[in-house]
Image (cartoon, rainbow, N blue to C red):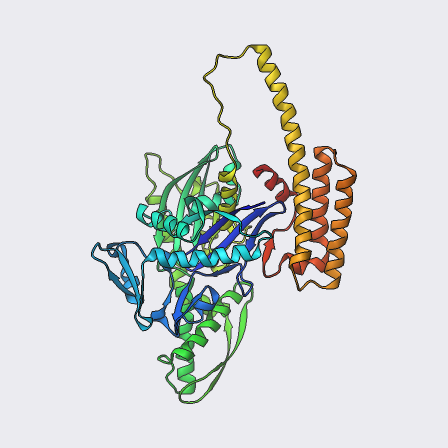
Length: 511
């Protein structure tokens, strides 16, 4: 195997990278084991930092740290006022955007910065895959409102990074692919609510696998970054009042508090409160700050953001084009995507609006990337072109061709099932060879699995398709059920899905 089918979702604030192998759809992680990592670049002391290491400098060196890169357009005329307030923006003689890092005396185009991020993504991919120098075929996603020039910018950045860009596609369409909605034949309508660092709502119609975006709306002032900022401002105010000091201008202190607020925001999605204990160095003396942050307090600080979400949904319905109007009662399903959809209050707001429980069964941080990997797999599968220039065949010739086709299909399906099992055994073998931190119990378990299924393959070279599929299912269930191997499955390099029968059948459908 020398080609990898990959999906890369460069969001406003985070990046997710997915892949498909015989065991399912999986996610790559970064150096700190995060599946979704910051879409961030920092230039500090002649060193370029990317991902999680770059975001550490967001508050300490804000003018040297590029965040929300995807929002920066090719032309200065396309930029929103908020971009000018964050970065030093200039333009060349043709009006093209140039981003200057004055402290480092550097200047970049948006394509160059995006290319650096994609090179970083490529390094994570090649480090984790079990084969050397792969050809990487990728699909990249963009918001549905992106202009043609912004889409070209993404494609050019991918090509510059050494990636084979198969397709630039809309985020909401990839949510549908991630949930397998395009496999359904009947006509249905969906609402996709994607809340990451902005709130994007899309109304979609899917008919026989074709996705049509009927209407969209967006509010860039609703998002996780602003929620963290509101929490940060409140925290600074509490510290200054309690300790009679001024730390708002102390970039080191603010950076420490920002990290604590970001972590607390994530924890409050699953906990009713978070106990904070933060040691803050200050020019007027070190400060030890302790506070129990309640989920209710977090929701109160961001209530103005939560209550605007229904207005964005209303706007999406108003923006539906065509002669047929749609309302919330016409929607077959409401789907949540984006990291902020972990927040319980957001789920409640959406549920109350539609009087229907939203679908969020797939990790909202991953669902777009999963859809992209599935699309890359489909796009990379060659399509046979049939020559119809000859005379029409006779009925006997048609029957003969049908019989031959059925025979070839059975043989091909059997071959694919056998190869799927062989590849699974090979991947486990390479896990044993590649991972240096495997415990003795993990090695024993994996070697036993390799020996068991290698022996079965050698004894059954001409087995039936159903026998190979049964052995593949049994192998997946064995790997996912062994406690000693679970740390490997959820480890820092590659994350696999749970190997349920549903997931296995799903991958078989893709093949």
